[in-house]
Length: 304
Length: 253
Image 1 (cartoon, rainbow over the protein chains, first blue to last red):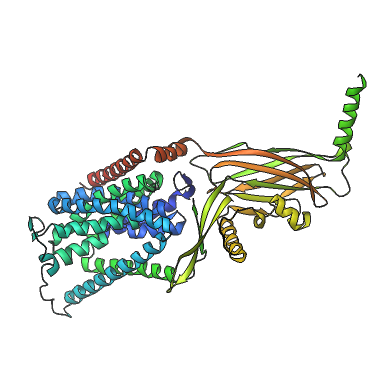
Image 2: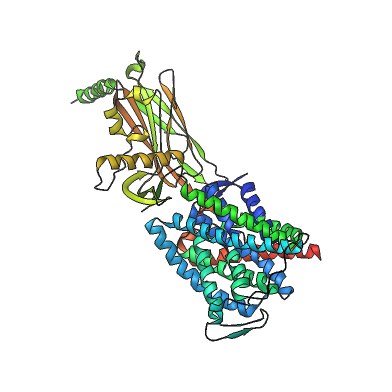
């Protein structure tokens, strides 16, 4: 079943794209991540032009996070106060990212920068998660003593001026910290087509020290708005948002997410985190190889 | 004065008699790209009219060339820098056909010599790309080959061996496939009649390849009303996500 994508300018197999969305949806339901870090590389691998892949996967993440945010809100799992600050930072970040994206496209280095960012980010976060998950599994099996209660948040963050109270997060910190964090994920969303959840969630836990009960919901809340802003930025600058592609991915992912969420309830979170860490590291490894291997085609064309 | 029309007719017959003529046509003058588009097959066909209707012992060859709209492009070349493959050098080309396909009744090398092939742009290596740089010739050659190879891999520059069938020496037809990722624009389909290595007749037909229906509406909306398009994309995405959540949520409750 082939369908022609109007913006990407090529025809794709509907089942492949919906299936891809479904796979990513299962993962996002299981781990509470948007899954953009998988969608974008897979779409590019399938032959979709990189700009279209990045832009359309941001659009897809918007839709995928709507129902998740609503579900978390019902469980009081969203800190709107904190989320608002993150969204503000993210909006600024996505506009800035739009300029960076265009500049990199002009100089021809967008692919390399995207590849490097993937390797560095996914690699370091994957390692961090793997270590943390392995430790908690060791604790679970009684092979290691429970770790000494870690510090609440990073000393640098405690040093920032002008503190606010974030009640649901159980925090009394400067709003500058989440603002900067939001800005960073906004940039990443535009450049990489990822929601940024895989950066945001660990940062909220380890850097800000947020109460884990609201981490996933709040991060999804931020992702919802920042990916929406990113879609607009891409629609205006790169004109690479393919509505049909995003729609197909979305159909797959919303269904997949339901299965993922049900599965997640039956598995211990430590194992889930370890599995996610493995997945993230695998993508990072693949990206690193892609940078170092001689590509099949060393030439690329750009219309003038 | 009475003799003049007669003389003219005679001259026309004699003049026309010297060379064979081509009567070409294409199966489609317009190709619409719609949602189910997975490529199209173009049929180029026609007749070779020999003087006196006599087919010579060595019938002429037919070469057909389909070209897409030309564009200016920047070609980038990746090089390994500090262990990473990244775009290093680049070259500009001013007239790169977005699509090129050639087919002939015999292998091109047997039909024409290199010089004629270069003049008429027969073969993917003979496309006039108009490089616009002051780079040394060998580097320019490398870039040209890189560009042709890239387009070839994308299925946009093709040579169809034995692509033209000639039956009874007078009727010819060629099938050329346009791939799904074919660029839109005005195409030309040229038919050449070649005898003894010389082009003795040529004819051009135009083919319009455009998006149509829903695909056209979406593409032009995205181009002309970028902000509105972005808003619609977001709204659609939110609506779909919300609806799916509502449906599944109710099922569970």
